[in-house]
Image (cartoon, rainbow, N blue to C red):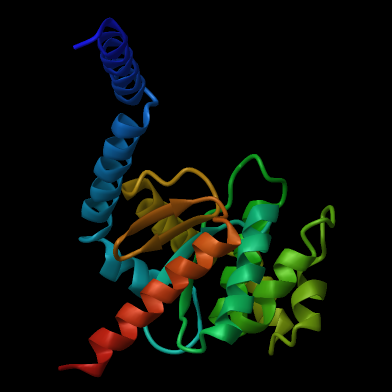
Amino acid sequence: MSWKRLGYAILNVALAATALALALKPGGYILSGYRAFREDRAYREAVKPIWPSLVRQAALIIGEGPPDLVVFSDYRCPFCAELDEELGTLGSEYPNLSVGVLFLPLSRHPEATPAAWAAACAEEQGALPRVHRLLFETAEREAPDWSLIVGTAGVPDLSVFRACMESMRPVDRLNAHERLAETLHVVATPTIVYAGGMSIGVPGPAELEALVHELVESGSTSSSGP
């Protein structure tokens, strides 16, 4: 072997060793990929036993049939509003998509808990589907009049709604959702949960559509039978 070829061989080995070292270092793509796989698996294992409770406890199901995914949401969270709107758009493209909503008002968001109470009290009268989006749209208001807001959405009996808001009845609903969130270590909104795992925050449009497509397709395949 000539000295020139030997030099190239040594250089290639050095480059390969450097690339491997970079890949294996913390944050490198090999360890990052393995960590992502391990975390995905951990999410799947965490969600699997609790999935029936998530479906059963959903305050609102947007669409027909059991939810393909559920969202821990906060009516004072702008990212939750964004995700809700994007899922609504995807619902028109995927008519079989079904989304469950769970309340997780965060203490750092002013009026988040009263908004969730308003949603729970509207749910008592079967009016949450009409109120849900409106609560996001009025998120910028300070000290809102909840009776006025839900009244514009057509809640049947405002006196019953007001009595609910002054009672402790919404506490059970919110506490149930909070316990589910704690079980999954959910501390941020929005968090998407599906039978195969979890996604924190608002995914990019392509990523969200890919997830919806996969869930809807797998749901239709499983429901169609052999």
